[in-house]
Length: 423
View 1: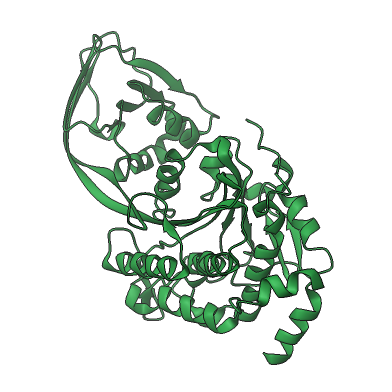
View 2 (view 1 turned 90 degrees about the horizontal axis):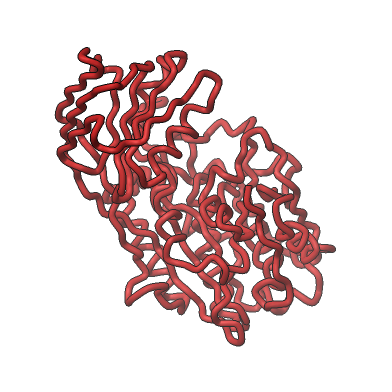
């Protein structure tokens, strides 16, 4: 370990050594300390709505306070909000004088009692064979209107999975009724009853105000939730989530320590640990609604950096590399360091829109995810084996240090990445 530390200093350009290592923030002992707490069995896998995730949130908030950050909003580092769930109680549905099978109708609503007829003004649309069922269904649910969506019977096997939209959602401004098949719907009456429950969640967010460009922001983020307790594997039922994503959360905590100690950031820096990434990205969605995207210069989301990348140690990849100039800027700042960022080697996985960077990226922010996860070979992904002992902590330390170095010119206001184009 000592030899590795000496070699690391040799690899980093001389102009960065004093600034980056003076606070002695980036060290394997600190990485291990934070990881070991967040991914311990005591956290029970950090599932949303659990005591474990509350303990993790308080731990991160205490770290941000110790670093010297300010709460992003109000007087608490906990950015609290509610999501809702709809527990089904009853349904009757008739169309064109015929009873519809209950299994062929799914009602997505935030209303405890709902009655819909042909006079209710609902928009009727169709998801045809060959379409993307879940993409099109999601667009209907989230467009803020009242909809009836007729779904081609070729999707019969996947139809029941649309109940996913009942599980967690923000306050709804419209209701959507999915019907399997294509009834004429000249006349219809659909009545549905649900128990609507509110569930509290919280991101953990702090800010380090900038010196000369206080109203411009650079964001470091990761998600701190995981999947909790699940099916036992070899007697172990706790899905610890050390790599996913206690590793990224640890990186955000150490980067907060680092930049708060330097006190030389021209742009303001937001450090945020998101909740509910594993349950639909609700934490990052809520967070993004609190900010003006035009004022965000860059977002570096950190997801699963505890294992070696496909190129080996001292390397990581950036999702959506071609969508803005953030990646080339980070690469340029690491020249001569011995560390390399690469474009995402797994384009078919569409990782750019599958993590917490996605909401802001869709608004044009150069928001990208940094990862080392080998999407074709991560045996511990969403398994009880995702524990601290499976991670390369020395390499992870180097990754965190390199993220800090690579973002320095953006934080200093010298570089501004190009915006992500609307797609």
